[in-house]
Image 1: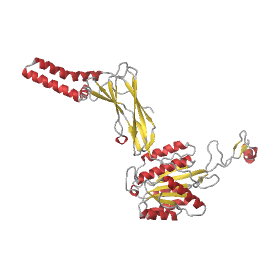
Image 2: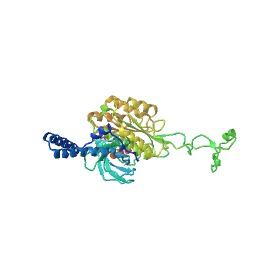
Image 3: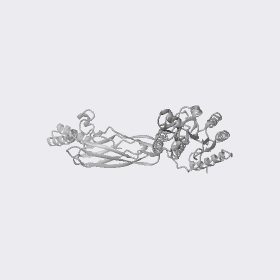
Image 4: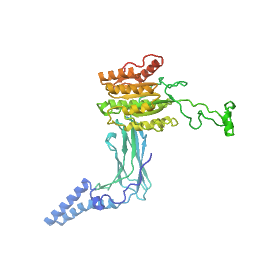
Amino acid sequence: MAAGGPAAPDGAVGGGLRGALGGLTTRGRSFLAAGLAAAACAYVLGQPDLLRVGLLLAALPLVCVTVLYRTRYRVTGSRRLSPQRVPAGAEARVRLRMDNVSRLPTGLLMLQDQVPYVLGPRPRFVLDRVEPGGKREVSYRVRSDLRGRYPLGPLQLRLSDPFGMCELTRSFSSYDLLTVVPRSEPLPPVRLAGEAPGYGDGRHSSLAQVGEDDVLPREYRYGDDLRRVHWRSTARYGELMVRREEQPQQARCTVLLDTRAGAYDSAGPDSAFEWAVSGAASAVTHLLERGYAVRLLTDSGEALPGDGSDGYAAPGHDAADSAGLMMDALAVVDHSAGTGLDGAHDVLRAGGEGLLIAFLGELDEAQAELVGRMRRRSRAAVAFVRDDGAGSRDAVRLLREAGWSASAVRPGDSLAALWRQAGRGAAAAAGGGTTGFSGGWS
């Protein structure tokens, strides 16, 4: 996406000519100081030749400031970010373009883009003379191990005279946003509840959208099977009506992310909280690709972002677009101030049918029992609980007793391995076996 516009390199900066004097470089200030000192010594000693030298030294930086201040450049700048959304640890390329739209060639130009320190050092480029109507393109890379949304810009343009006596800075007004999303791990296509057609597990019946069938009659259309004619409606409306077939059920899943600050004891890219966020991102992406309507829920009961009226990703949306919206939300999700999971419990109690996948921090006995009750309206439930020793083992035991497929995990463990175990646990539950599976990952 291009951004930018005319820079301000024609006109004053910071208080007019007086502000331009503040742009004197070390060389320019040295020349000015040496010239004034020589002129003062020449006056005291009565040396006219030394006075002329001193005046020349002092006048040179002042002339450079005046010429540079009066120079009228008209340039435009644009920035192209590719891609605009990257996973943590991946690189994005930023391309800068400068166009000289004036009738005069420019002098020496220095470009500097404002970049947050987490993305690396500020890039600087030196451009030689740009001819009238000419353009220059440069590029640099940015990378962050921390998810978030980072501004790039505004672009700064430094003008310099040929002698290096003065530098003036002009700034563009526009900037771009780089979204660093959590790392997501490809998950194996295991069988979970609600994935097999013809079964009701995890599926939600809803009215059809445009072009789909529902349970209401509609007007006859060319090509409809005459065996579907609904004669009672035909007599009522005075035109041929046909039955609409029942719409196939839509598989649903809620991904619960525990963001309580008290449930995690560390921070940084390798912390338990960041593992939970990455796990939620992996699950969301995988389930959307498999045709689920996915809702991303936090411990407070807030749906992130929820492009449907009930908080689920709208089934009519493209899976990639829905995944992008949720990944953007996960890029900026932070710890909550809550101490319990009551908000999520209330939302799931009101409507939590389908598959439930939870990424949980530290759970005490009361919170583990509360999470266990969230399972009641779900066909299947899978929980990943932060491993904090004996407490996590007790929480996993309580969840399994409530019908969850639960496991205590550590940051850095493979989610794909546990996902396979979740598939086996769901199959065992469907066959009347144990719903839990062994804790810890290989």
